[in-house]
Image 1 (cartoon, rainbow, N blue to C red):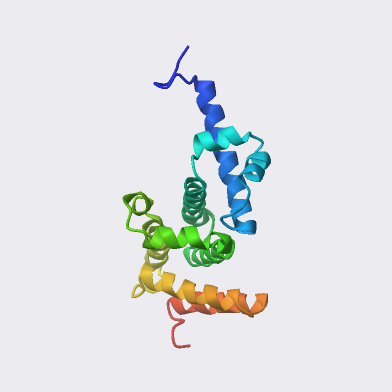
Image 2: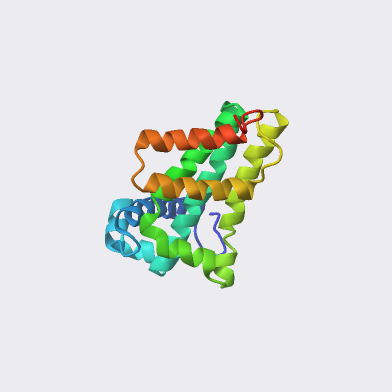
Length: 198
C-alpha cells in the first residue's frame, strides 16, 4: 500500500484534499454572508464534514479565513488565462475586471482579514503574495492587449488596479447596476487604442 510520510494512503490524501476544498468553498460563502464571525459549525456542516475535520485542516478561524481568501484569489487570477483563451484581449480584460469587481463586492464580510493581509508585517501574510498575484493577472491581460494592438501601451497594471478601486467605490454606493456597467465600459474605452480623449 502506498502511503505518504504521515501514513495517509493515496485515497486518504484525495479525501483530505476534497474535504479541504469543500471547507474553503463553504467558508467563502459563510464569510461573505456573515463576516469573520460566521459559525464554524455551520461551515463544517455545509461542507458535509465534521467540526473535527475543519480543525484538522484549519486550527483557527483566522487560518481558515486567510486560506479561503487566498483560494478565491487564485481562482480569480486563473480566470485571466481562461478568458484569454476564448476572448479577444480587450474583451477578456473587461470581463476580468467585471469579475474583479464582483469578487471585491463579495468580500465585505472579510474586510478585517483583507486589511490584515495588506497591512500586517508578519511573514505569513506577506507570503500570500495576494496583491502581487492580482497585479500579475492584470499585467498578463494588458500585455496580450498591447501585443494585439487593441490596448494602449502607456498604462501599467498598478494604474488599472487603482482605477478599479475607484470603480468599486462608485458601484458599491448608490450607483445603479446599469450605471456601474457604464462606468466599467468607460474605463475599458480609456484603455483601448484610439479611444482616449474621444
